[in-house]
Length: 488
Ligand code: NAD
Image (tube, rainbow, N blue to C red; front, top):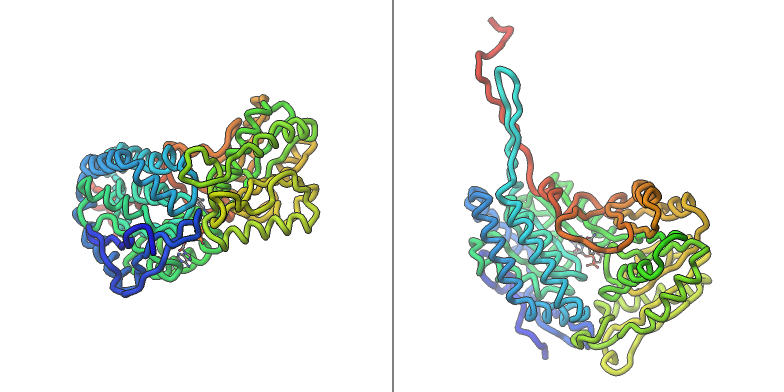
């Protein structure tokens, strides 16, 4: 018995059943019970979605940016008007608290559509004067883009990929994570209701196999994937077979440096946001919190009571601040890291166990957990856990902190707290990360480019930078005089 209607595919402007004849089940992580049956796209469904996107491409790419922007703008308004209903679906599908989803998930997706709606009419090439000739460049769309999402911010990720792709004149086939298939269809509906022609935005459902069919499809020009590093590697290797453009938004183990002159209360607030928001399932989380030895005690004393006050509970209860992890398997992985941390000699300061009280009885809840470690080489200080587990480390000077912060194959994000202006910018420049926050953490306004360096990814989403990744330049040379030639 599931709670929602069957979740369809969305192909050529309407909901569709899979030609494969297969379905799978998505569950509610807060109850462990089935939430909905989902149509599973096989290769023939992926083909149909790509064909619809290809058919829609010529007319969509020939529209003016202003016309495309108007549609994206309307879609943003529609999403906002459906905020509460979509936020509730997101909570049922992801387990995250409604206190977050009702103000962040749909809203940030709508912000992104609005931003790129405004950018669409400004996308232009350049003019290059060459004396007796000139050249101009055209910024042309790539064609059919594949978007592949992770499960932590399903509708936001769908919007972060669809908005710039569509603004630039591309069409898209989007595959949400198989664990959170519900709300991508809501974006498809909003776009259709806003006037996007059939085929401009399509949704296929399924897991790695469906993703592979999309990435391997010869008619797909670009892949933008949000997921883990191993998945990114595989998808990029597959995309290389047909030399597709790629944007890879992958995992991290980001550092947050708190210097001795930091505002401690703000640093604690940022560390809590950067470790426990969405029960820790955020790629850019500052899970390695480096504390200057002089403020270590003050920081820990200010932080622990606030961690203990967090409310783990029913995600639909507005008072809940920590929801359920995405699945039993993921909860077990997170608890496995807790065990490993204890075995390797990390000191547990709070949390460290599954929560099964009251409303949490049947779901995948883990108490917010804080470890302190003496040794950066421990697995919990090196590997992405993607759950509510913070690791504290102590340092003595700036140079040491930067070297230790950078000693990771990841490079998604970093943060630092200091009142020293020169140090703030000096350290920001030295940190190997796609984004550095000074005196805050984890804010990702759509105006600001976001993405990773090192193995955390390639390319950028958001900001004007995203346009680079959804267009290609064509150079057009124009001769105004005679053709010069040695061939008399
Ligand atoms: P995942 O790598 O398991 O899956 C990501 C997506 O890729 C899913 O839709 C999945 O079905 C698909 N997929 C899996 N194998 C594929 C293949 N071979 N070819 C094509 N597609 C394939 O990641 P997840 O567990 O869904 O999400 C968690 C991970 O995502 C974490 O590592 C997290 O850091 C990362 N993440 C990164 C960002 C970012 O913006 N950098 C944002 C959110 C999450």
